Length: 224
Ligand code: Z5A
Ligand code: MG
Image (tube, rainbow, N blue to C red; front, side):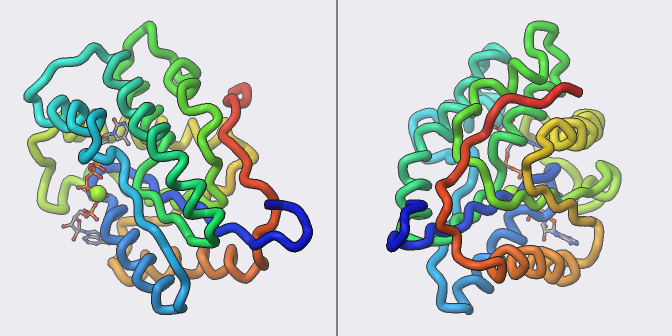
């Protein structure tokens, strides 16, 4: 890629946000609209609960297994690393890859535990080197509004106090990644209004022309 005559790669788009912010719903709507343009797309969700690491993560989230804070953090990261080759293959084939949660969730949910041996930097570091998204759509919603969407479930982390911390940490994390293309969207709006804003952001990216430069990777956090 990046050399004259080579095919343009696809876009890497990440959708992030709190629990119940509508990530999965919006990813599906976006994919449907991309497909409607006759473009190839791939949807990926993290954690991918189908793999060996994903099954360990699933057992932990459901309260059926214990893990140290450090071990579960590294499992979430490994769950992304094992998907990298597939993501790169899809991007190189020119497909748009839409990712439901990524390294940003990985960092903030672990950092929100306030474990003194797990600084924000410590949490971020295992994901350094992962493909860097061309666009991050941050679905922003207050923890109160998110809770109104059917209330929180039974899984670990699904508590309003934790979600409020996570929201503040997302904002802080993005402020330390100045070279990242982050678009914050008010996810408290009605479904179609959120979808329209996401579509506009996608169109802006798509209309900027084919991507011929190499994909970059996530790098170290900037100073606060
Ligand atoms: N986690 C982590 O710790 N470390 C990591 O590295 C990663 C994740 C990747 C499971 O994640 C947990 O793993 C999660 C973070 C942690 N813990 N928490 N909290 P998950 O991705 O498997 O599950 P989730 O995303 O948290 O939950 P979710 O229920 O899938 O949320 P969502 O995808 O954002 O929302 P949704 O399913 O699209 O919508 C939720 C409901 O709201 C549904 O009824 C919709 O119809 C409704 N909805 C959606 N949009 C709207 C609007 N605009 N208006 C009204 N109602 C709406
Ligand atoms: Mg979801």
